[in-house]
Length: 182
Image (cartoon, rainbow, N blue to C red; front, top):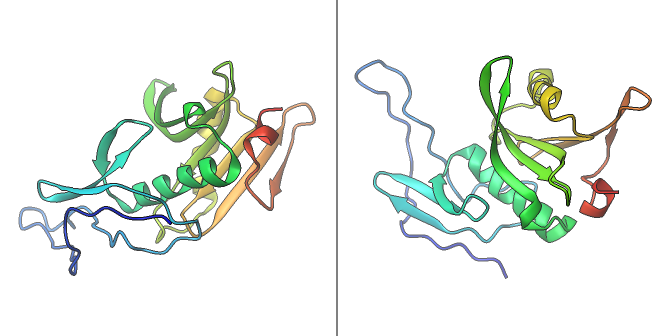
C-alpha cells in the first residue's frame, strides 16, 4: 500500500496577493489532488514556509508545485507500471536551444545514454494545447527522440515519431520501456 509522509498538516491554502506588486504569490496546491495516475509513495516535508517533495532522481527536496506533483506521480507510473528503470530517467535536463538555456521536464535514456523520450508536464489545471506540443517539439530539435509525452496528470498524450517516413502517430497508451528501447 502506498503511503504519504507529511511533516505538516494541510488546512486550507490560499494564494494572497503580494502587497508590493499585486501579483499572485506562487501557487500552493493541495497535495492530495487526485490525478489520472496511480498513487505515488512521496516524501513531503515543510521547508521554511513552503512544501517540498523529495525527488529520488535528483536526490534532493524540490518545491511542491502542481507541476512537480504531476512529475513525481508520472515518473512513479513509468517505473512501477511501465518498467522504466530509475537509472534511465532524468528530471530537469538542461539543453541549449538557439543560444538560450531550456530544461526538459523529464528525459528517458537508452542503455548507451542516448535520449529516447521527452516528457513535458503541466499542472492539472493547465489545459494541454498546441502550444504545449510546440514546446516539446522545440526541445526535440536538439534531442531528436522518437517518443514525445505530454501530461497534466489528468490527460496524457504519447506521440511516436518515425523519422524514416517523416510521420508521427499518437498512441492510446504510454509504451513500456522495452517497447521504447527496441
